[in-house]
Amino acid sequence: MSIALPPPPPLVDVTALRFAAPGTGRLIRRPGPQILNGMSFRVARGEMLGVVGESGCGKSTLGRLLAGLDRPTAGHVTVGGDDPAPRGRRAYRQSRARLQYVFQDPMSALNPRLTIGYQIAEGLRAHGLAADPGRAALHWLERVGLSAAHAARYPHQLSGGQRQRVVIARALSVDPLFTVFDEPVSALDVSVQAQVLNLLAELRRELGLTGVFISHDLRVVRYVSDRIAVIYLGEIVEIGPADAVFHHPLHPYSRALIGALLSPAPGTARRSRLTGTPPDISAPPPGCRFHPRCPWAMDRCRVEAPAPRPAGDGRQVSCHLDRPPATDAARDRAPQHREVTA
Ligand code: SF4
Image 1 (cartoon, rainbow, N blue to C red):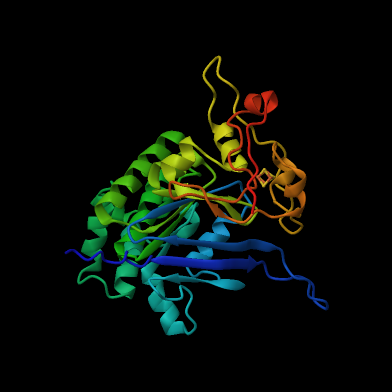
Image 2 (cartoon, rainbow, N blue to C red):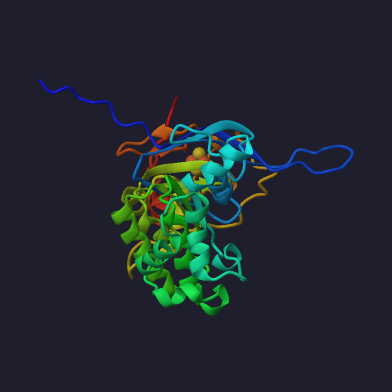
């Protein structure tokens, strides 16, 4: 008789995570805006979670908390069972090799005065991870599609795409437990974006990377992620398998993000479009935060915030509707939606 083993624990465990920006005012301290408003999710070992949403929704704040660059205001995060931002200089320093962060702008992430080879070898040297850090740096340059000749160059002598490859090599060379990729291709030309995305997909397969991939572009996120979390104004509104969220989004906001990407074939119904701009995060609307922009908002949405609920195929959605109609035309003809009751 075979005994079913319990599933392995998730590598990343996030519970009721909140983050408020630092307060302002000298004499009377005013609290800063609540940027993340209670997120809970897990990331399995070897999994890439895509995080998508409009700018200012809290994606990068989430990335910084996961990488231990900031501390939560409430709730908690563990990576590999540990606090990603441990107290104490020594413990914090040790955690840096385990948690890596690839920033959007590779130029500002690299030191303009140091050669590329030195900068890749630096982390290996600092954490004692290679017998010959210089040789290991050359190996990593080749692994990201550059050559040994690039080792002697300075950041300004490389193109944007080459610089981002260097930053990726530097992050992955220390064999991190978890990596945050924060808009790593959004500053690149479209053709270079595709090359860097292919490289990331290849490295993911080879190295079994665990991480989060942050972008405002759902197509980009889908290409490199196993699951996708859609964020609106500091909250996860939908999370689930990447293909399911991309092809059959359930939350009206996810649908609008897809609608903004795809041009429908001639003769097919227009998908829902996103209108208006996100409200100020320091004064979010009551009830469902998306209600001022949602084409299906009901009275209930204006007063009651929807709780996350399972929606089949491993998905969770925060919406009072069971399934909103797929297109604006379908909504206008006859609302097919059904309200979810508690
Ligand atoms: Fe729209 Fe209401 Fe769903 Fe919010 S809860 S997304 S306002 S239908």
